[in-house]
Amino acid sequence: MSNSAVIEAAIHGNVVKQVTLSTQFSGRSRNLSSRAPDLPDFVSARVARYYRERKEGNWGGRHILHGRTPGPDALQLSSNDYLSIARHPRILQAMTRSLANEGNGTLMSGIFLHGDNPQLDFENNLARFMQAETGVLCQSGYAANVGLIQSIAGEQAPVYVDMLAHMSLWEGIRSAGAESIVFYHNEPEHLERQILRNGPGVILVDTVYSTNGSICPLRDIVEIAGRHGCVLVADESHSLGTHGPNGEGLVVELGLQDQVHFRTASLAKAFAGRAGIITCPSSFREYFKFESLPAIFSSTLLPHEVAGLAATLEVIESEGWRRDKLRANSAYLRTGLDDLGYNLNGSRSQIVSLESGTEPQTIVLRDALEERGIFGSVFCAPATPKNRAMVRLSLHTNLDMNDLDRILVACDEARAITGFEHWPSTRRRRNEVRQAAVAA
Ligand SMILES: Cc1ncc(COP(=O)(O)O)c(C=O)c1O
Image (cartoon, rainbow, N blue to C red; front, side, top):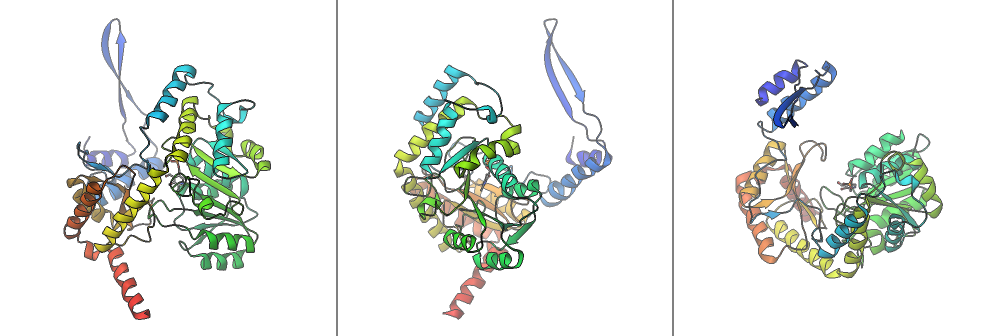
């Protein structure tokens, strides 16, 4: 069906899903076609709006996230495998050994796990590595955040949340039925003003922000939390493995492990697996497993995932050169992009984003980079505010100087093609530079 036909069909409550099943029947192959029932108007109108407003309206009929297919010499900057360990032989061996020995293990909720168990051992080891009292392994960073906030927040206290905090933290607030009070990104003074107005509550921050790579002013936030009797949750998804002397995360790097009540992290970033973790006080652990809905009502990890993560922890601890190289690569690229005049929105990490603004402008940027073999990830609403879309470049250890220079050449050439001079982010940067000059 053409795009316009899909829109027409959706508008008239007539969305058709064709599923073709191939089956063996009487020794012959035959095709079965199934047709989903029509959707009622209140659903089909939403579907139609997506196609009309976003795909046709903003993206010219193409998918904003799906550009070219990368060729063999493409530089992939869309993976969160910051330390380049997704194919590490030691990790793969641990996973294949476990798969061969245990298959998919026992399929059930993690609430039933007890006694001598590799998953509980890993949970303890990871928490110990993060210098936390204890921790609980979750199926994902998303499940960790939703389950944790749902277990500590509610109607009785507000939840203060940085305006750029990850969507899973917002979803946790929603599922807790708590009131959310936003504070400006990385502005502790604004947080404090909000607390003085609304009383103590839960504070939610990311340590490294996933859209722009900026770093949370954690020391200030910790002080404010302590001064006003608040509970602090720090999402370490983009700093666990990459920050801290051995990859323990930003909280440990800053020596704040005894002052942050809860840390959460996705293990699908530097840990290159699929899981999440929360760190917590010992008394909280059993309570959490009986209170967090994702912990109770969603099945736990598979044995080979746990075996892989256990091996990953050893790699992350012992191969510090990966962190050093990542840090050097990130600093080099940030400096180069800054020299080209890009507004990096405070990035101080391995996440570097070019904020092109509107979605059509972002497609132009994406195409300009991809034509030059540079494949980042497009971020747009709901991952960013409207008209603050961007191409995010996730840097990694395996990039060498040639690669970094190639990215810089592509970004240099992209400036003229994309009208970068007129992006709101570029104008903001020019204003900031002007104001700083006046102030000096
Ligand atoms: C800051 C942050 N928290 C949580 C998550 C969710 O992690 P996961 O992909 O493991 O569900 C992500 C991933 O996008 C993230 O960037």
